Length: 564
Ligand SMILES: Cc1cc2nc3c(=O)[nH]c(=O)nc-3n(C[C@H](O)[C@H](O)[C@H](O)COP(=O)(O)OP(=O)(O)OC[C@H]3O[C@@H](n4cnc5c(N)ncnc54)[C@H](O)[C@@H]3O)c2cc1C
Ligand code: SF4
Image 1 (cartoon, protein in one colour):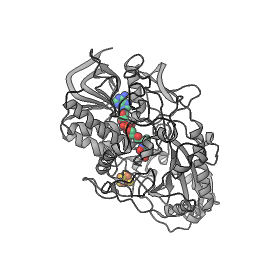
Image 2 (cartoon, rainbow, N blue to C red):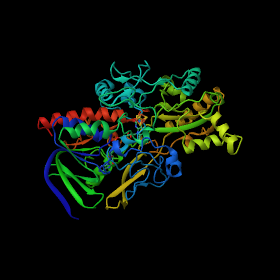
Image 3 (tube, rainbow, N blue to C red):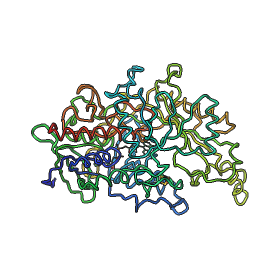
């Protein structure tokens, strides 16, 4: 194999340009470090490439999901989804795991949901509360100032709710949340009757102009990406600032497969294959950051050395977690007669339900909580949604069907439970001994098992949704089974994979320290969800951004002192 090596030595090499890599580049370049950003995907420019205003009837098959566009024709994901051409992965016998990967500058930040939550004080110390899983080596109070910075930079909506373990942000951090839509006010009344709190949404979508970016137009699906920069994407919010410093070199189509080492036991750079030419290259740097996503960063470490690089703890790839998911949809006749209106608003719900059972986990029979995300209203219809309505109409076709659909449109609401998984020994990724990708690089093999804590939680989600639908006079039609084993999502399906290189107090119990720095190799850092010791119900990206801001600041400080 011919490997082309460049003579240039960068201060830092970053692998991956999504939430973690984008934020690391943003911080380090402003601190005047020379950064090489290696991204496996192609260049992507949201301003010129985003099909933001396209509507379903302009797309083949009216935009429905297909095997090569899993989330619909206009979804922003480039060259990826549940399968990436030429880059397979394997689920071990008896396990099922789904791994979502994009291949584009900015990674999943281009098409993520934008729910943006802080973890609460209990989330950082789960073991101390109930003896399960692992505590983080940092507390909420230590991370809070970094959450403040992230919210002020990217723009996150929210309101002080005064709820236990749902931290309120200091004044000036949150943008005003959007008003409730009629179906949300209706559902909020139902939740209130069940003694379940409802909160204003926390989402990285601008409700007013912010840091030179315009407010959301309330008109287009965020999953298409946002060409005006009104929501958070690494290529619209982080990378332009990094680029403007003159300290950033970005190399797309560069699939990193190995961290290279010098004879003093320090990282000297990385090796990568150009996905277009197939040529192998190596790049040199004084420090290396892996931000390829929790699973891919683990893959790089495991492929770098027999037994895994930075793996003296034996924990690389171990304790992989995803969010627990379960959903139900219901039809609400009470919403049928609402006047026709445009409910487009934010792509996410304008309200959500934070976990309300903190103090009765024992009687509930599962250890950790979940929150509920809500979807509904009279929004731009999609083909799949229209199918749900035709099923509820008595008239099979023609003008009668159209009239009935008009009357019923907006009366379907759905509920997604998103819950905490407790890390377990049976859920992990490792290198498959046989399967390799197109370039001969060994791929990941996933092992997965939910515990009863998660299946009982999924069952509780379904029962809660069914009770709510019943109380509001609705009829459930999807997600009816309350058997937790059947109600729960497939591992990886919620696309919140974390763990695999957890942080801790010592080299014995963890892969990295509280700054994401390898215990074994002091100039090697992990800056993605891999470092999380637990997986709270709250979606992970704001925490990835906050940890990376803090840890990149630490890295720059150490570099300045010559301590790496
Ligand atoms: C549809 C969807 C909805 C979501 N909704 C939410 C939500 O509402 N809230 C939330 O908090 N989170 C959400 N997420 C999850 C969120 O996108 C991730 O938590 C976040 O993007 C993770 O950041 P990351 O930097 O670890 O990975 P990514 O953002 O995926 O970035 C990793 C980058 O590394 C690149 N890369 C991978 N392997 C290599 C390699 N070997 N060499 C070089 N580069 C490599 C990838 O191409 C990618 O660009 C959602 C995700 C999806 C897909
Ligand atoms: S809904 Fe708003 S933030 Fe989302 S893509 Fe449209 S304009 Fe941008």
